[in-house]
Structures are given as structure tokens and as C-alpha cells.
Length: 287
Image (cartoon, rainbow, N blue to C red; front, side, top):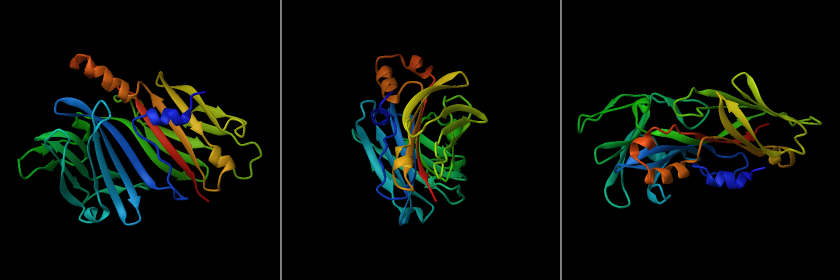
């Protein structure tokens, strides 16, 4: 069995347990983007803190060196739109603009529609998120939406909350369909709990005798693509009543391996690669 901790530490989105008993409401996404003509990783974190909603952004190069990191504080978000300029290691500035004036949210801190967030370096788009077509009044450029952006989401981490059935969505290939994931596990008053994972309506994983198999891994197939699933439900079974379980779904090679590979590869060959995806779910039980 693969070690879950080492696997998480190697993934593009790092996992940190929250000290709060109920967990922090957080969504973190890693994107493969381009800066100064080279591939880089952009990590975007949406979170809800005591003072309101916050957004943090960090850029790292292929060797995991931090190029810049910044946070949009909750009180700045109270204006619903704004701009921030951050100095990038090695020279130049990164301009971050956001507009949440018409944003719609679900249960989590990440906006679902009616918003845009753009990262621009030297008049070139590094990352553009959202579904709004905005006109930049200063230079007259039309900001493209996420579907026209050159970036690709390669990892996602989110906190999900439920009593029995946990739901999430994932695209295991950058050009593949969006899949609905459901995780079902009832540990309250159950003598011999089991764990069931479905992709769409299809059951892809059933773990029986969960008290003995509370950690494990198994390869499933989604659209013919192998996806490795790792789970750790120890806290659900033996921890506090509102414990947190961790699930990881991983397809394709890690981003770090890809970035190292592109350093010695022709750029056209690198662009022909279809990216895999890492999904990390921290599932919190609620009463």
C-alpha cells in the first residue's frame, strides 16, 4: 500500500490539517500556466476565515522556487472588486485584478459564476479565472474567460462536509468530461461499516471491514483512464465525532515530473501532453 502522507506531500496541492475542530472552509487549486515564456505553477486558495472571505495566490517555477506570494484580505474583498500589484522574483510585477460584484456562491468559499480573477505579467495573461468577459479600461484588452485561458488545472484540494454522503466533482483529464464523485460511509451505530465510492452512477470502489481497512489504495478506471484512489478514514472510526477523513484521486503523472520533463523537451512535444489530475478531499463529519 502506498503511504498516504508521502503521496500527499508529492502532490501539487499540499495538505495541512486545520487546528479547528470543524475544519476550515477551503478550496485550493493548482494550475499549470506560463510566465516569461516558461511553465509555472499557480496555486489559488479560496477560504472563509473569521473576518470573511480571503484569496491567496502563489507562483512557483519548475524547481518549486517561490516566485511570488500574496493574499487578498477579507476587508479588501468587501469592495467586491479591485487590483493588487506584487513584485515577482527575478524582476517585474504581477498585476492581480478581481471582480466579485455579481458572483454567485454555493456552500463553499469558491465563486461558481459571475466573477473573474486575472493575473497579468508584462501585459500577458498568466491565469484568468471566471466566466465574465471584462474589458480592461486601461489598455483596451478583452480579458478571456477560463475556457479560453492557456492554463490548465492540474490539482484541487477542498473541504467537504456531510453526515453520510459526500459529493465532489473532478475532471481527471484536462480535455475529459466533468465527473460527479460521491463517497458514502455511515459509521453511526453501524457494527461493521463499509466505504463506497461512485463516479456518476457507477460504483467503482467498495471497502468492507472498514475497521481493519481504514487506510488503503486501489486503482479504478474512469473513461478507460487509470485513477489511483487512496483513503484514510481513521479519524471517522476512532477519532472525535466530527473527525476528518482524507481521500486522494490521482490520474496521470505529477506536475513536478512534467515540469522537469519540459526543461529537456521540445515545447511542441510538451504541449501535446495531456495532463493528469490530483484531487484531495478532506471530508468532515457533521452531526
